[in-house]
Each structure stands twice: as structure tokens, then as C-alpha cells.
Image 1 (cartoon, each protein chain N blue to C red):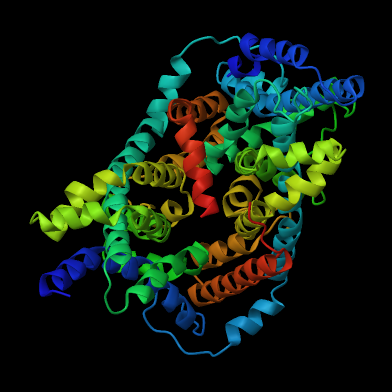
Image 2 (image 1 turned 180 degrees about the horizontal axis):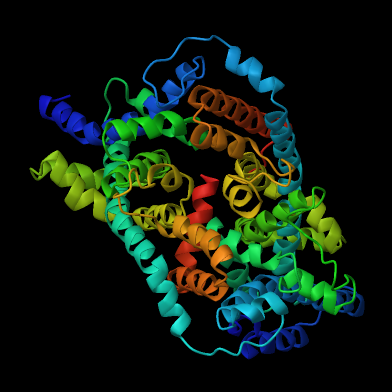
Length: 309
Length: 311
């Protein structure tokens, strides 16, 4: 390699690497170090306390509850989003009137796709305001208003969607699913369209019905996308910070009485409200470990032989 | 938003025509009736979900034309206060500033992200040198870690640089956190570009950086567009980073909230001030640019976001 080339390579890499190391890599590394200290953030001095933060963490009922809620989200967000998205993607791509015996998409599928995808471009902050209004705890909320109109809920005691310990998590789950279905639907339907039509036609000649062709052909050929979707939704379920912190009661959310707490909200409260930086760092490390476990586990558990077509 | 719900006459017209021309050779009656039932069934469900998407959004927009008492009263009263006054009130209550702040940050952060991201990706994809693989994984690995892992030290790092609650601080942080994905995507894109053009440019005496800016970068336009849309949406909707980094640091430090942060702020204020129409008007204002961008680049947005995931 010529000398000028080295200079060029180094010159091009310098700024990107410098910014990336300063704001991403170095803080990542520091977190591990700080998680072993009793650093309060404001003071410059701190002591090495070993694994004390971690042992404290596992006795912290609020944080353990938060982990449990994240696990619930981890199970139900991917399952419901993927099922609904798969259902609609199949409807869009194969639910049409059969022409010449083949499988076809419904009329106007393009327009459905445009509408379904739209929530995805809106920020979660907008979701929080929108669903805050939908879930209002009096007749002015969309959901309560509707239920009162239908006579399912009495006007005097509407459901407090975000203040009912047993409901709040599910109310939040609905927001995530509502927001995410369109995205995964588009993802799946792009994958479905890349499946060659002759496979379907061959199955049809062999006498396969629609249900059979879905489970025997579409789903196996879509498996890669489903797997990707699962990992992404899993990562989203480990986060949940925006919705919980803005829609539920309490500083950084988590209410009522910690029933909707997730790891991120506990961490942010400890960091910004209580100033317990070292402790918050330990929570960050736990979040990382759990996220990595989830990704690896999902990839392992859903591994199938890859089908080339 | 109601137009897309209607079936186009053209599309629905062609379907029966085709099926009547080409008769189904195998079990004609059976197949067709199954198809029709399924078609009605799927249209029913699809339309239902479309309504579930559109109605809440429409309801929120309409609510900005209601009075506060009306909002608290019944969810389905028809708005009575048809004046655009509420929007200018929302704009003055801060939405205007939040909007401007977001635009200022993104005007710098998105082009910088694209520039630095493709520079690094290009060098890593096209030149062999010691440590190339390592550097590539080093960049890409950042995408694996949750941002919460870095949050605490990041805050103190930015504070030490004296950049808390400044535009430049947030811009640099946005650029840094968009790096893994941008490098990853552009790296695979530069790999697919033909080598011949590159060699021709070098043979003609173009310098390496000139080859990059005048030959390779223009060729990478489709990739740049996808990643650009992805980064714009991602940075526009970012919430956690500005929440930590863009808080006024002292009494006379002005608020420089970005839009997402500002909306939440407004939500908390208006809850007490009982001026909910202003909040809903604010959300409507925040949705409009997204709606416009989405409808005009609909295909690219969908392709950009989904292909990004699949890589």
C-alpha cells in the first residue's frame, strides 16, 4: 500500500472514531467501573465498594418488580405484535379473491399498508399524549366514553386504565402493539412478496388450502423475518422508558405503587432524582446483560434451517 | 387520511373481470366461494384495524377544536370552537421554540451523521489495512447495547465538555449514537459498488478523497437516502438523550427542549393549567411534518426502515 493511502485512511477515520469513542464507547466502559463505586455524581470523590451495588440491587424490591414487568412485556409484546402483523400481512397478500385459482392480495392493499405504517413515523412522545387522552379516567377519555356509550361501564365509576394495578401494564402493552404492528406488517409483507408464486401454485395443484399454504409455505419461508422481528421487539420490551415515564403516575412514572415500573424508570429515578449514580450504573449493566441474554436466547430458540429460494 | 380507506374503483373493477375470463379448471365453484368468503372476511378485519389506527388520531386532532370543559365532559361531543387560535396559542406556549430547536439540531446532526458515517464505512469497506475488521466490529457492536448503559457517564462527559443544554452537545451525541447503524448499512452498500469505476477514477489521477466525494458518494445515493430517512426519523423522535442532556443547568439558562421533550413538558403543564386543547393542538402541529414527509416519501420511508431492520 502506498503511503498516501495510509494518510487518507487515517484522515477519514479520525473524526468518526473520535466522536464515537468519546460519546459511546468510553461511557459504556466507564459504566462498568462506576457500577463498583458508591459515586453520588455531584461529588468528585467516591469509594470502591465492590459488588455492593449489585447485591443491593437484588434486594431492591422495586427493581426486582421492574425486572418482572420487563419480562412480562418481553413475552407479550413480541407474541401479540407478531401474530397480529402476520395475520394482516397474510390477509393483505393472500386474502384476495382468487384469480384463476391462484393466491392474490386484497384490492387496495397498498392503501391499507400506508395507513397501518403511519404510527411508526410518529414519536413515542406523541403516543404518550394520544393514549393519555384515550385512557383518560373519566367520560372524556375515548375508551371510557365508548364503554359508557355502550353501557358496559357506569358513568359514575369509569375505569382508571392507568391507575389500576392490574390493568396498567396491559394498557401500556396495547400502545406498543398499536404503534408497532404496521411496521412488522410491512416487513412481513415484503418478505411474503419475495416468495415465488410458483411455490403457491404448486401447493394449490397438490390440493393445499389457504390455511395449509400459510403454515406449510409462508411461515417457514418467513422465519428469518419473524426472528428479526422477535429480537427487535424484545429489545423494545426491555426499554419501555418513554411510555412508562410519561403515562403513569409518579416521578419518572412507575405508578400506581410501582405496578408499572420497568428497569429504565427505576434507573433514571435513581440517577436523576436521588443522584445515586453508581447504583444507576449497576442497573445499566444489569439491563445490558439481560438484553444480551434475550437476543442470544431468541436467536438460539428460534433457529431453523435456513431455506434458500 | 380517509381517502386511503376507499377501495379504488380501478383495482376492484379488474378483479371480477379477470376471474370471469379465466375460468378455474379445478373445482371452480368451491374455490371461488372460498375466495369470496375470505375476501369479505379479510376486508372486514383490515378495515377494522385501519379504523383503529385512524380514529384515535382523528379524534385527537378534532379535540384541539374543543373547549376544555368539552374535553373533560364527553369523549364524543362534536367540537364547537372552530378557530385556529388554539394553534397559534400552542405555538407560542413553546411548540414553536421546540420545533425550532429540533430543526436546528437535525439540520446539523443528520448531514454530519451521514458524512462521518459514510466516510468511516467507505474506508472500512474499500481499503485493506491493519485493524480493519476490528474497527468495523467496534463500530457495529455499539448497536447491541442499550443506551441506558451509557447514560450516567455520558451525562458527566458532556458536562465536563461544558456542553449540557447546548445544541452542539446534542448534535455530537446524536451523531455518535447514529454511527453504528450508519456505518453498518453504508459499509454493506459500498461493498456492492463496482470496483471498476473506482479504479478508473484513480487511474485518471483523482486523489482518494476526491474519488470518494465525486465518484463513490454520488453512486451511493440510494443507500444514503434510506439511511438518511432512517436517521432523520430516529433523531427527530429521540427522547431519552435530550431528556438527560437538554435540561436548563441554572436559573438563567434558557430552555432548549426538543419537540418530543417539549410535548411531554406541555402535557405535564397543561394537566394543571387545564388548557388541554393547546396540548392537542401541539401534538397536531408535531404530527403534520411527519405526515407530509411520510406521504411524500412513503415508499422510501417504508423501504428504508424495514430494509434497515433486515440487514
